[in-house]
Image (cartoon, rainbow, N blue to C red):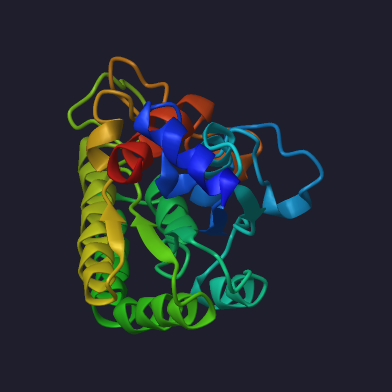
Length: 255
């Protein structure tokens, strides 16, 4: 009683917000949630859970949060269902990125890097067809599983960025045709994610605008890696991208 009264008093003074007091928070999903590309992976192995990932940043900024970091590099919807099994039932907040690997993100990038404009466009169109026709049911399964495991949790679904400014400042690398095709795939994925999140009663956070001016071939291309070594960090947010491209939109959306 006294502790609750103290929190209420502090909240009235603007010192602490009651919405996030002592909240249990779980970050689910793939490499965009685990923080691949942002460094500082600790002992997380192949999952590459970064201390600079947006979920960890959010937890750090909300004292009293019990944070469970389950996101893992390479995760597809089926893998996220397994992550949900490890989620505390009393979880109050869940964030999630998933769908890109189901749609064949790595193969799209590889195909576009090694082949012609037409072959790249065809591969992107194949991925878009999958996203529109097959992925919705897989996403629905994931969102239902979250609600089943943690009925009182607020579920926040985040999008993926557009990777390129087209036309941009790059004088080498992929053609603008390929870059535009890849961006169109991200747009299709965002549309489906938004639709299925709304149907599930989840909140959708579209990060694409936050990356504008900071993506590949932009004047300040500091939010996304281009082709890197190790290769798995290619086309993933940097530490600055996790903060400016993911954490900031998330905070704007939910506090």
